[in-house]
Image 1 (cartoon, helix red, strand yellow):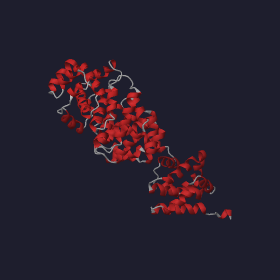
Image 2 (cartoon, helix red, strand yellow):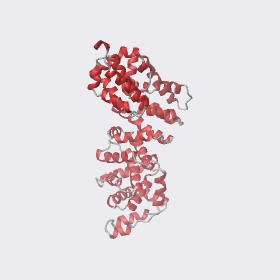
Image 3 (cartoon, helix red, strand yellow):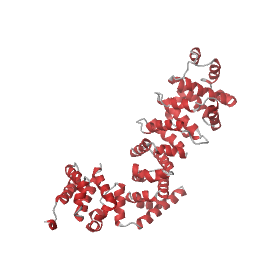
Image 4 (spheres, one colour):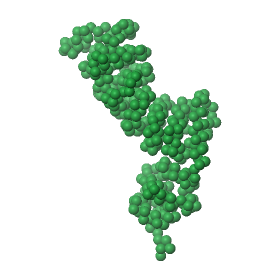
Length: 436
């Protein structure tokens, strides 16, 4: 795994400045923090032309890999850590064959190579944190055996804070690091267990980043979707399907659409019952039909588009009107689709909301806490329809807290919410003639 897979202009510009900065190596020796042998070795590469340093690394690579890591382990001044991290990165740049030199450092010291790099992640310096993250990604991604918990977990914890950071550089580097790490199954499982990372991905996409960042974030989501647990739960937890459709509809780069459709393909293949209903509610079927008529430079896109379209069509054809309603209810994205205002639908299906200990009715009442005024208006309207067509439902609604919430919504800022809340409350408090 090449160092160039984690690229960042801030790191490149800062590294160039750091290469020319002096470090008080002699002072470290006088303080007995550096041995005379270490001093002699470091002076050979400190602020020297790249060609000379390359020659030294070529002839004495293992010695210098150990030197840099040992010095990083015991020296904690920011400028010194910056210098050592640049030396490590320069040794690795365009030289993947040197990665094992750093990995083999564990044979000389069990703390190496990871402990010093993990410690520097906590330094109070953005460059040190980000450069360490870059190097750690290279080393961890190149391991031939599953990564150890004590190395992976602290790194992912830091990346989770980077993903949610206000710093563009931290978000940029974190997403690139995760792109590389998520190729490994143990990393996918570990990342899925850290909600802040997925929440960070969603937040980035909601703020409409550029095409490259969109692609990289969705590439991470695509890699995660190979895990069964992720495929089953990601939409329920993060509402990812409508978000990805929105990104795809606005995308100008083919690669962004390609990775979104590939993600949908994975979600359908691994967990159809959990994802197909939400995809239908989010109108992925007409969008996929539109995509299937476009010209693509990559034939794989068309193959995935056709697979997604065909699966959605097959699922759509087997849906009853009530199935459609349940799909919409499960998605949480209620809108004024025809079923809501159909008296025939409610006459036939109102009592079915009572099935499985009122499971669907409880879901409907839960949507009365939505932040979306359209969802609120439709949900409180449906509550009134349920009571209108299932008279005994009044007490059930009251017991489940629906009546109190509907009454609260009568003072909601949105006029539609107030109107439908008023109609529902009238149904809830009315007395039928049959009871008189």
